[in-house]
Length: 200
Image 1 (spheres, one colour):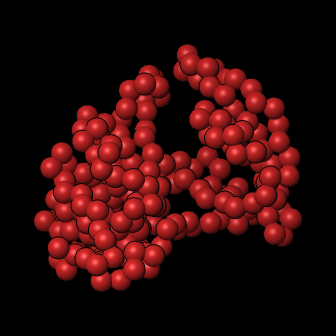
Image 2 (cartoon, rainbow, N blue to C red; image 1 turned 120 degrees about the vertical axis):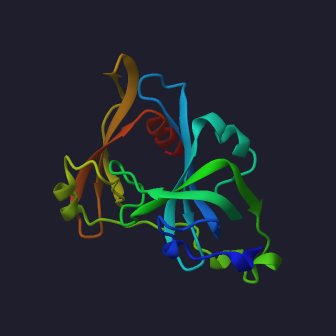
């Protein structure tokens, strides 16, 4: 099973009937901006043992098929998927030209260390393309990629509710500083505000 897998960085638009073995590094649901209850897709970042990563998406109308089958942090054998062009806006994995789209018939099997031939711990748990604070400004207004930064919270605003397309959404402004003591402001929205407040 694992023997027929190809590395993520070898996937192209011409890839057909291939399989990968990868860890689900991040997993989240995407809801409609118009109706915060309409599930548009379930998305994830997959990482293989070479450290290559890719964005994968399951359309909302059949993401329920995988809800109990896929868990963040676990390693899976994945087969029968489509390789499609990466998004042109809000790319999760910006340096990839392609992403994976699951079908209702995509095969997802949990992989044990015995079948993998290496410890599952050899597959990275996370990968981020961190951007220095001084380069973030160059991406302001650019919507082609989501940006990853790391810093320590040095200042925190108040949680406020803002009107977004007829819905009330909570927001929180934070100021971070990095090891060079450069500072940057960012805003958390919606459930990210709730998650941040719970972790404090």
